[in-house]
Amino acid sequence: FTVLALESSADDTCAAVVTSTGQILSNIVVKQHHIHEDFGGIHPYKAVQAHQLNMPGAVQRALRDANIAAAQVDGIAFTRGPGMTGCLGVGCSAAKTLAAALNKPLVGVHHMQAHALTPTLTSAPNPPTFPFLTLLVSGGHTLLVLASSASQFRVLATTVDESIGRVFDKVSRMLALPWSAKGPGASLEEFVAASPAREDVAPLMPRAMPGVLGFSFAGLHSAVERFVTAQGGAASLDVSTKHGLASAFQRTAVGQLEEKVVLALRWCRDQGLGVRHLVVSGGVASNSYLRDRLGHSVINATRQDPVSLVFPPPELCTDNAVMIGWASMHRFLAGNTDEYSILIRPKWSLDDDIDIPQTES
Ligand code: ATP
Ligand code: FE
Image (cartoon, rainbow, N blue to C red):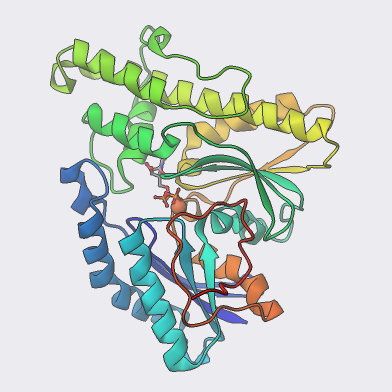
């Protein structure tokens, strides 16, 4: 079964062709960071405009790279939510129109379900087995989720304020770090990795909600902001101070993930759930420091009863349409598809019944 999938929930316009045997026939990602940098974040109208501009070309390239005609595709998938309303609308309308014109079945996918299921594609032939624990760290979310099947999720922890990805972006901009084509979060990682950091800035960083299964990044964000403001702004900071600050920020943010992951693994063990894998996905999971740290923590915490850590390759951690096509597959194969009248769901919890087709219009 071959799926053409579209993704447009935030600032990347994506199209891909994926098969039910896990072949990635094409994967087009059109980034638009450069459009938003002047606004200090994703500008909603500029993002919609960029999707409108780029979606037709992305679909055309995805089909061309896959060497397949639209009529040969078996189904059309798209990101139904959660995400930015106008942005989701572009991918939804394009997918519905394609499906209707080609008379193909249609599936609207939950974006975070797609991030969570990515390793079931990328870790073949030994994919993580259900139930698994998943840490989803991205631009809009910081979640610890128990995945019981491809469509059943239970949110164990979320953030009480900001998402980790957004705070990486904001701190990177606040420190006016060098530009990276991969975006401001990745530029912070690159800046920290580029040279050894001063350790003495670290005590400024607060530890969030110790012992609680929940995330908070606002305190850490404010601590960096206060420090930068007290020094007279980023322009007054020398490179070595910026290094110290960026490195302490990254260490503390990732440290919080380590602590909460260990708490959640302990909870799963105490509940006797038989969790054998921890899946880490979402844009921030492309961070190598995070991969390294979590690797150590999970090995240390699960010596008696080993849990394997699974990451998708970095390019499939950030937004892409491959994951949308893959997450739609079980519904296409079960014939559980959506009507062409389906609407987007900008706010949509992973705790909901995410595979049930829309009934009301
Ligand atoms: P969501 O998936 O919650 O809807 P999104 O789709 O906008 O949000 P993703 O594309 O999954 O988010 O991830 C983008 C986020 O990942 C950005 O906030 C970005 O800064 C962050 N990110 C990407 N690479 C890195 C990195 N190497 N280190 C830290 N953060 C990173
Ligand atoms: Fe995402």
